[in-house]
Image (cartoon, rainbow, N blue to C red; front, side, top):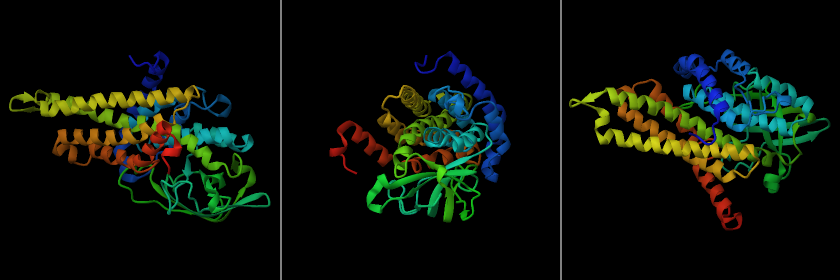
Length: 383
């Protein structure tokens, strides 16, 4: 029995699982090969209510809570981690839009987002700073009824596919640090925007790339929150997305581990199934234990968020531990499959996909600083 998953959530997970197995999983390898995100499949997922269901009903969602979003996220990621980025980006960006956007501007985007008709990126990272996220150089300057944006963002998920991006830029002086950052909702069809795509190791259906802004004029009513307070907004959002990322990568590892148990039970060596050998079964048993513990941590974090309780430390634990654990588990599964796992297919693609989360969306080193500050205090754990 799981203390965080009640009967209604179990039914929701089964419903999402049927969609994931029947519609998402069959195209996993093909989307990796073509690097094309299936917009039709996005719309199907939106029509079923599987995109950002935690948003309030008057903002395009269903008001189901963050754990509900998490159990759906698990099922989609189990079938295709790269495609599950649709859910991740929608929950992260949808939360920011719903809380900080002007209703008349945000409402149409939230409707499109939850229906699977739009994909939004979050544009924070720049060439000169990833972990030092407040060290921004992209300029956001107020001119009459617009903001004029100049600069570059890099390593942005869905950079070349997004319909809009939440862009964070420097509106104050460099010395103002995190207090001089302003967030804007920027439609990607505005004049002056160009973008490219990287040749990434994994997560190829969603992709990553750079956004370039040259005198891009964004209406002033597209500002999110108060001027100069954008950095605080995104940091609060990341506490939520880090727990979702944990569930995302652990679901991939769970799928790999389930397949590996079945394979090891039917594959024989020296007249016995592989599971009869402790050198095979014990590493899988260790993985089983650690996956269960990590998943409970992620669910606990979402449970705390649903109740508006502090969860920054728990979210950071999810983000540093789960991606590393998922990679290690999938790696062990690949080795257990032997040459069959090393061949191009589900196992090696899973390994490539989960690896990226040890890099993006907050490194393990930064997550451990957050945990240390929460426990010992910021004064004795400086930046």
